Image (cartoon, rainbow, N blue to C red; front, side):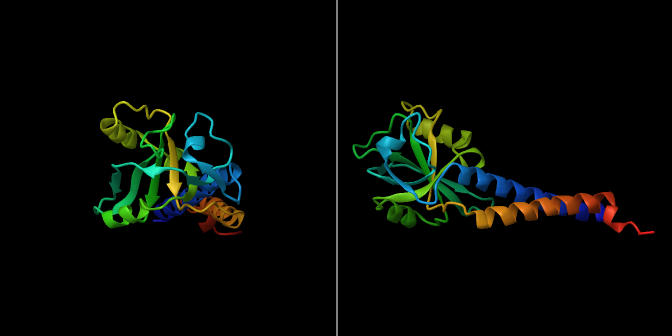
Length: 188
């Protein structure tokens, strides 16, 4: 029983630590103040240093992918961003947003003229599943180096990152201690 408890505490700690490190990597690459940038300026091989952006001068693509969880509830929606003339940038930009629950909400989103958010990579980035989907719809476009942008994601704060990372590390230590029986030993 103690090994199961230790394993669960360890996994929770690992998750918290991973979240903290991921948020810290975003924090390191950006600024608290979002940079306003046009889609044309963003959709190039080296778009700049700040990941905290407000994108302007764009339109949403005509097709989108709905990512669902196991209960068939919407998890997030992936939408290509086009230049005002309806074309992709040199490096395609694919936006994604969490929290939408209907096609009506996607329609409301498509009316926005500016979208704040964070450039995402790694776990939250544009993956193979999304790449295959958009390649099947837009076969002439190369999505190999597509840029992923999470709409409405807040820039992380050190007041969140530090406590969540330290809590994760503490849980890892506790979990290992419980699993190995260290905390259950009797003192002499």
